[in-house]
Amino acid sequence: MKKAILATKVGMTQIFNEDGVLVPVTVLSAGPCVVTQVKTVENDGYSAVQVGYMDKKDRIINKDKSGKKEIIHRHGVNKPMKGHFEKAGVSSKRFVREFRFDNSEEYAVAQEIKADIFAVGDKIDATAVSKGKGFQGTIKRLGQHRGPMAHGSKFHRHQGSNGACSSPSRVYKGKGMPGQMGNKKITIQNLEVVRVDAENNLLLVKGAVPGPKKALVTIKETVKTIG
Image (cartoon, rainbow, N blue to C red):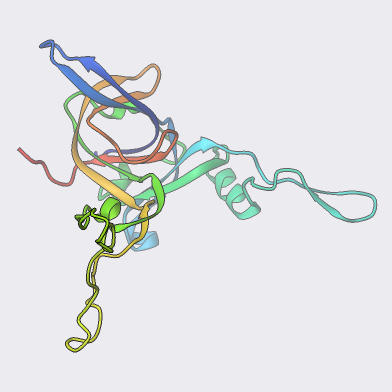
């Protein structure tokens, strides 16, 4: 059975392994997730498992005596999604993701997926949105070199020549420019699970995982093993 789970990043710490070696780890609060739909080739054209993570309030709309609508939970789950969760027999969820598995028929609707689906030594891929660092220059964003810092120099932190005036008379695609830094989906492959706390649904993963604290992290079995 292929394995995957949704998690929340708690932070980083360090532990000692059995050999007494200090290991930096990222603590992930993994699950519990619940299966909200099982997709098959016969019904949907492909095989996948849809899971939900973290409870969320329903969007409630009341009408007062004047007939005006009053939204109590503006950011709650809307009616279509509420009906989807009720059909699966689960509570409304904040995050819904789909994992393409060839063995989706091994899962059942309303089945709970917890952190103990992974074991110590498993290799995983972690996907999350990295920290956004705003608009940055090329030195910080791309690691380019600065110019001379003497008083006579008028070139300090500029990204350099953008393009020749005569030929090609344009800026090449891919030229390093200032711009948005971070806030992109990043996948770190081949991370190792060093500890599993099934009672508290915690995974300790060796190394760093993208994203800030409380970020949503998607954990899957690694697609390739290195070393």
